Image (tube, helix red, strand yellow):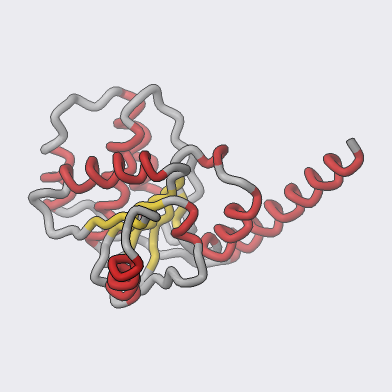
Length: 197
């Protein structure tokens, strides 16, 4: 019990330091929605639920502010579409997006969904997983560093030392509760002035 209490205190202290640092940081203020953002949202096959519409507006408001976003999205369904809209907003301002997921299967699912939604738009979506060969991974990481990839979806490999972003603007974490302490510690290095969803 004592060790657990100490660990909880350490985590709380780290979180307080992270949020204090983020409060002082100046983030990137995204431009208001352009016609391409409206086109993407209009191409959604379903009608937004009231929760989806509110979450989308709140996220856009946060992204257009100079303070780094920290937002948790809890809606019944449709979280992926909300994430897609935020990632697109980032890419229209030439910022990269990392989509961190807990499993390889989910990474591939999200990759297919994002790829399909951006089919008619100039956005390059890729995914990083152990299913890719060493050569494919090396090429992908070179393109990422050069800024040729707008959105990269992957598991904890995204926080590896070899992953270098040209201009990361948005970090989307799916099912954050499924990530261990080690991954969360590595995320802190990415998080200080990056918008987090």
